[in-house]
Length: 426
Ligand code: AMP
Ligand code: GLY
Image (cartoon, rainbow, N blue to C red):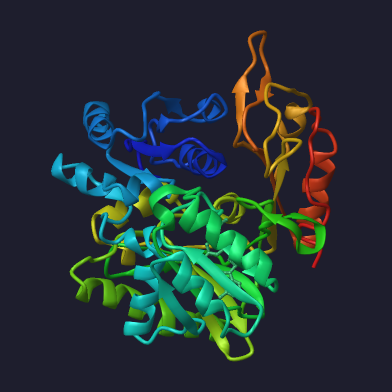
């Protein structure tokens, strides 16, 4: 066993970052885990240092002063804004792509054109539109349903899959005319809707070597049976045998490898987590989206199955030596169940007292990750976000993991709490 010497720094403040902190803290090679800006919940597992994530140069200077061995970046916005480039300019090691690499998530039009240029399987595109008029006209000649996507980041609200021309025109108006998401709606793309099961296929790469993480699936809709509005993710599952070895090889060969080779050819070699959002269609896997980071809540389900040293793995990534890591995954399954605030994904209440958090204390295979909580004055926690907690359990199979997560969720109470009842019930 190696001596505890590593001091990793995590950037971010949500459930994904709590899961990373929890896993890193368990590593025998880790001395301390740091997190900027973190949260009161993350402070259970890391030393948190408040700062504004919009000040990229300030974060780089702060990271330099903290003398971390390396930094792993949770959310996309700092990467899209060039955080990895700023860190490199300060001589700091970072797990996360450059600003140029982060365009795979930061611009859906860049990603779509990239997919087409390199022959990576994706859904057919109707077109890219620069004005409301062009986009409206395009809708006259499509087969329904269609998918409309804002080019830029919209906090998960920039995509509409719809059968309704009225809904489509209203969405285009909100994006391009009312500019509800600002610059992100300057251009939109319209593409064919694909049918199949979605899969989150996330790899870690040092630019050359690729380490596929356990596959997982998010549940994006607010209500059971995939009804209701889209959310940031209401739960995630991961289980052994989720995809066959052949399908994994096909995804690596047809999606991951050409993406990394293509980015290198574009002059933007890619380092960090690459999240391929796939639709498993009758015609094979097709890319719906790329993210330049770990998924949230997929990360929570993935770390629950991780049976290798994440701290050493991230260090190897920054050294271009990911090939020295042998990943081992716990057999069985994991489930992350998101407990959300009343009203989410719309306007939600905050400041409600959370009871029952001790449910996970000392239990094997059960952990409650904090996403939107803050410390209450007299002790304990209150709600402070839309997605509040990620109750995450592992088990011998999906049924066992889900039963453990739901039993724990039933013990946790706060006014307005809601969660899906069908996570892990496939
Ligand atoms: P994106 O932000 O591009 O991932 O889109 C968010 C969600 O919209 C995806 O996770 C899918 O559920 C859905 N979506 C995106 N593109 C398509 C497509 N071409 N066909 C069907 N659903 C899609
Ligand atoms: N869970 C979807 C995402 O992280 O984008």
